[in-house]
Image (cartoon, rainbow, N blue to C red):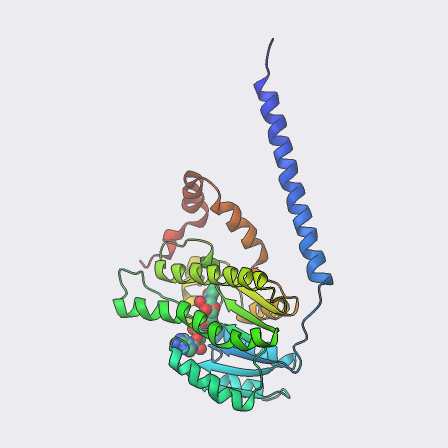
Length: 303
Ligand SMILES: NC(=O)c1ccc[n+]([C@@H]2O[C@H](COP(=O)([O-])OP(=O)(O)OC[C@H]3O[C@@H](n4cnc5c(N)ncnc54)[C@H](O)[C@@H]3O)[C@@H](O)[C@H]2O)c1
């Protein structure tokens, strides 16, 4: 009997295609439904501690929190006077602490000072981070160590220090800024990429830990933005390479919505999450083709 392989394969592919499209539609509807009808978090009257709030994304997050009526505390190694000025029009309490958030002792000292004035930190935003403009072969070992400490240790230290009281009170929110490089392996910023993959893993693990401990009142939000126009050096590189870039203001808006809607995992733009997840499960030979002909990452190497 004649067996038509072509027809069988095309039927299987057609069914597979339908089930993938079906799954995407169902998951899409579930997410829209969840965001629309889940209990919203009210930020008015709450207190948020934002690391790296003196510049870039951190500054925009502080402003958006203040617009919602949320008290804002900034922990930054540089002066946050510019952000503090921008917070003045809002009827909220704002404070700045000049500390190195990768230093555990300094965090403990800040926590003690804070406890005199603020009864409870409702929201911790781990935003401070260093972005390298050199490959690991051009960076000194000190630069590599500092980047890991600021991007990774600070997130773990800050969370450890401030989640204790959240667990005691059964309520709170830990927000961490990772990056799309925390799920997509970019070849020319290896240590940055490693620190952001680690931060993504930390946040996903933390979410699961809280679920297992039945601490339903504590939310976690991991934000993974693509390139943002926060610094002149980033804007210059991106303009040269013509990459999609987002303003810190727009990203901060998405982050505040994610906090209010208690979203756990948000890529900016949203569709990047889906694209990168599919990319990561493709065979390496297909990934190489996409990297060479679509991503064209070599353009990011300094000429
Ligand atoms: N800009 C981008 O393209 C981009 C893309 C994805 C993710 N991110 C992430 O977003 C976050 C904010 O980035 P940004 O572009 O606004 O950076 P930025 O350099 O504009 O701001 C970072 C802030 O962190 C502070 N900081 C640095 N080291 C510190 C330390 N040891 N202790 C306390 N504060 C410290 C700096 O003083 C600064 O105010 C970072 O975690 C970054 O990795 C940025």
